[in-house]
Amino acid sequence: MLQDKKLIFIGYLIEGKVLYNYRTKKLICLNGSGGEVLLRKTMSRVLEYLISHATKDFVTDLELMHSVWDQHGLSSSTQRVWQVMSNVKSRLLILGIDDDFIMRISKKGYLLKKDSVEVLFRSRHDSMAGYEGQEEFINKPE
Image 1 (cartoon, helix red, strand yellow):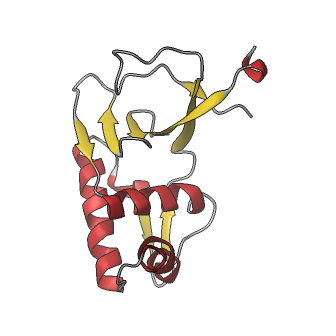
Image 2: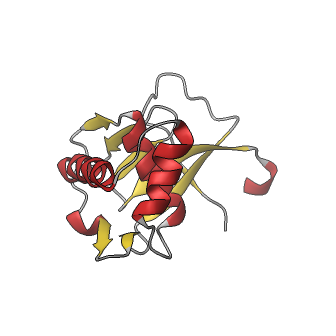
């Protein structure tokens, strides 16, 4: 029974085809091509912040600059937001994620395509040995 198991957060399933592994900061294509992309720290923070905050409402550039750059002792600017966002989108596109997964709302901020991300967990008791990047997933309980 799922409620009796301790669950460990793995990451996110994007559009049903790409896994974002929270621990390794890798995007892993699950369609059989075996493609994977490692995100740098700032890119992973941007993606994680968007997934956590931009699925129901848009996230402003100022929010991103404060949460992703300023709070980590980095210098922020709208140019840096645009540049990192462009890099994240291009890496997702390489793995088959639609360009409209991350949408720019003119003069407001960014929004993720509705219902395009699932949170993934695994049981604490499931063995992970030998399956790096190929975990058996359990969707977040409702």
